[in-house]
Length: 368
Image (cartoon, rainbow, N blue to C red; front, side, top):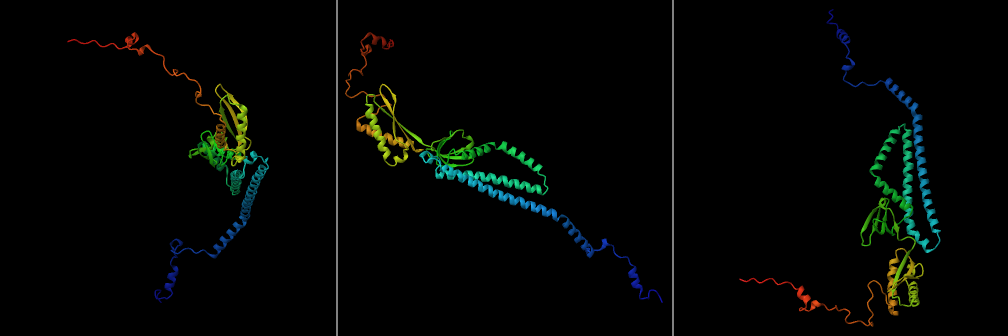
């Protein structure tokens, strides 16, 4: 029998043909069950080796966050109670007019809000910032470069924005020291007027003509508060030196007593209107001084009303107020009718030698 006619020959030839290499295969390699088992075993071993570290880091981060949150709440409540206690201590001030005006209810509320807001913001920034740094250190992050960079950046910002820092710190101390508040009339040196807004960087003032001044807190070197405590109203009454002092004093005292009993002046006046006496004595006048304690910011109003009443009372009593311009001559004084005439002059006579000598020389005539 021929080998070519043997039916087993194709099968043997097919088995003898070389198998394709793995690089020549076109389909993806399917992992075997053994490979999957090894991978799962390695992952489980890695998790088993590191789960304790992860759990420790997670618990540490959670503990830091809980402590930071609790500490922040406690500190904020402590600040709020401190501000309330300060307000209660202020309310215990002597119930005089001065103590009642230094810090009224609205003033205390505004100041408490400002101080409490600043302190709570600072406390929250410090607590949360410290917690963030502790969390970063928990993850084994080197904080030295971060802190060094923050320090360099802080120095650069401090030099570049030193005016802003100065304004902010000045505003904080102005609020803490209660130098002025909304509604006060102040003289800040660079501007004066009524305070309409107090900020940590800028204070807004409304001037006498309605203009608004924006004053940087760092530029305020001295502050004159005209709305704290009390004000003094002073009026000078200038009369002739021939007037009877007792009569003038009795008249002024009566004017002050009548004004103190009427509204709204009885609320503006925090004390009786006192006649202090003679402030000055001159040859043609004498000055009697009146003074009274008033509500802050009401001194000018009281002075105007007091001058009005004094003038009407003196006119009714026939007492003249002098001062300013020189005194005019009395109407009944005997005057010389020739006092205002000039002395006769020789130049008035055109025929006199003086007039002839002073007359211009006529130009010579020209003859043709």
